[in-house]
Each structure stands twice: as structure tokens, then as C-alpha cells.
Amino acid sequence: MKNVLSVLKTEFINTITRRSFLLTLILVPLVPALILGAVSLIGGDDDSGGGNIFQPEPPSQVPDGYIDQAGIIKEVPEWVGEDRLVEFNNESEARQAAQKGEIDGYYIIPSDFIQTGNIRYMSPDFSPLTALDSSWTITTSIDYNLVGADPMRLQAFQNPVQVTRIDLAPEEEQRDESSILAFYLPYGITMLFYVLIITTASLMLNSVAKEKENRVMEILLSSITPRQLLTGKILGLGLVGSLQTSLWLGTAVLLLQVGGGTLNIPPSLIPPPQILLWGIIFFILGYLIYATIMAGVGALIPNIKEASQATFYVILPLLIPLVMVSVLIEEPNAPVAVILSLIPFTAPNTIMTRMATTSVPLWQLLVAIGLMILTIVFLIRGVAGMFRAQLLLTGKKFKISTFIKALFGKMPSSTQISET
Image (cartoon, rainbow, N blue to C red):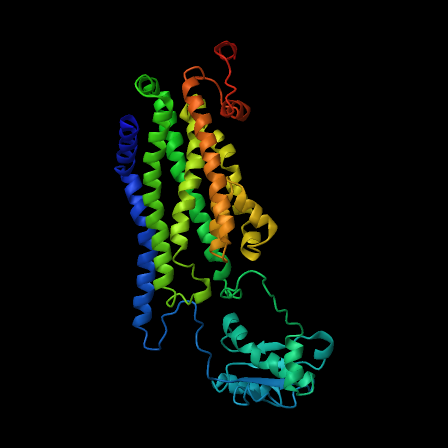
């Protein structure tokens, strides 16, 4: 136990005292916090009551004009208001009114509108954003008159089919799927977990590969057992990763809770506070899986230059939730999402993406945790065997087939290695 604690302490102190690590640890959560604070201050100084960066600008109070050459608009809907649309007999009158500032611009409904569906918008100071913001007045008026000036028919025309989805799972707060954040918030959490697990597990690969290349590994294995060395490294770097995860994920949840109003985030899209607890649990388990694999890779590669190729094979399972993130967000309880949640190598990212989108059944969380623990036990036993044979494999080029054989205890003999 003493040897394990010594390795743990050494790895932890050496990592957290690096200037690059400290800057990353502090700046990653500090930058979005400063941005949110700046947005709040700017919004607080706005006398118009703004401050919400997702709120649209108030519509212009100056009306638009229209020239109805097709004779479609008989009356302007009451909710649009005749003060928002002014009819002109010809384009000359409308142009003069626009130049005087009496109207923002004017629409021309040509006589062949029924055949083409095209209208033109003329403005002395044209802005695409302004035109899009105000065009609902003319389109609503045209639709209203085309359906016989009947509000009920207009509603049915504009919303012909309304599908109500009933989830058989336990009742939960409905998400506002119309918001763009309904996709980007879970996607951000997916990326965050991918970065956390890969960066922290990569520390293990670099540590083992560097010590092996410098022959420090041989000295260490002469005084402690491979399992003690592996356990100490995993726990030491795991503490580093847990510290980083707690700070980053905690800051993200806090900013979403505190800054939700400033960013106009619907309450149903803000992840629940308990996601922090589950996030730490699944990060630790995901880290243990990939850090153990990285340690085995580090024991097999001849030098640190081979690490990039070997790392690609290792992280392939973790990339699957990233590739399928759209499916996981849109259908978080679909069979493919549940299956990926129960596979130990894809569970961390998948579970957190689903938790940011919907409620995940407790049995799935517990089963995923149990399967991940069993995988960790198997990997540690297999990788410890690689450490015993790592001296034999010094200088041998990394192959995924060799790694899998070594993981199951089928290590090549020294004679086979010398021949290669």
C-alpha cells in the first residue's frame, strides 16, 4: 500500500504543478464566466430593458405599404392591424411615402401571384433581417384572404397537422425542442466528456511511454510490483482528472443555472443539478477504462512517437457517441441509445448526453456502472501482465493484434520477439 501511495503522490503532484495544466484548469471555466458576466453588465446598462442576447430586437413601429395588383387582400386581419399595412393605388405613391419615411417599404403583389406565388419588397434602406422580421404581416394577410377571411380556416391552413407525442416513460418536464439550445447544450456536454476522458487518459499514456523510453520503468519494476505501479498511476492521474471534471462540469452547471435568464435558456433545457454527481461517477469509470488501456498501450509502444497511431485505435469506441450525437439527442430512449449506454466503452459519453436531454432510468445507470466496473477489473489484470513483459517488448512496433493478445495474457515469448 505504501508503494501505491508513493506512486499516486508523485503522479498527482507532478501533473498539477505543470504550468500548462494549471492554465487550462483555470482558464477553461473562467473564460465563459467572464463572457456571461460581460453580457449581464451590458444588458443591465441597457435602458430599453434588453440584456438577453437571444431576444430579438423590437419590431419597427413604422408600417409597410402594399400594392395589390392581383386584388387578393380585401381586408387586413384584426390581429395584424391596419396601422401595420397601408394600401397604395400605385407604386409612385408608395415610393414617395417610403422616401418621406412614412413607411419602411412596400410590397408589390403582381397580377400573376396565384400562378407564381412571388411578391416583391421595395425599400430605400433594404435590410434582409428587417424584411424577414416584418414579412409576416403581408404573408398572413394574403393567407387570411385566400381562405375566405376565416380565422379558423387560417389556423388550420397554417398548422394542418398537429402531432402530440405521448411518452410511456415516467412524466417529466417537456423540453422546448424549438430552441436551438435543445441540441447544442447536450452536444456541448458530449464534447466536454470526450475531452475530459481523452486528455486525462492521455496523461497515463505519456507517463508510461516516457518512463519506458527513459528506462525509468525498469528501475521502478525492480522495487515494486507491476500492479502497484499501475494502480498508483491510475489513482494519481484519476485524482487529477476528478479535480478537473468537478471544476469544469460544476462551473458549466452553475453558469447554466445562474445565467439561464441572461442567455434566454428555457428552464426545461437546463440540466438538473444531479447531473454533476452522475457526471463525476461516469467520468471516473470512463477514465479508469481508458487510462488502463492507455497504460497498456504505453507499455507496448517502443517510444512516445508511436503514441498517436496507437491512441487512434483506443479512442475509436469513444467517438461513436460523437458521430451519433444527433440520434442520441433527438431520440434519447431509442434502442440504439440504450445499447450504447450499456456498452462500457461508449457508456460515459452516451449516458451524459442522454441525461442532458431526458431522464435516464435508474436501472440503466446501475447496469452500466456494474458492467464498467467488471471491464475495469479485467483490464487492470490484463494490463498488469503487459507491465511484467514490457522489458521483452522494448523496441517492438505497436500492433493492435499484439495488444489484444497481451490483454488476454497471450504474451509473445522472448524468442519470438528477438526474431522480429
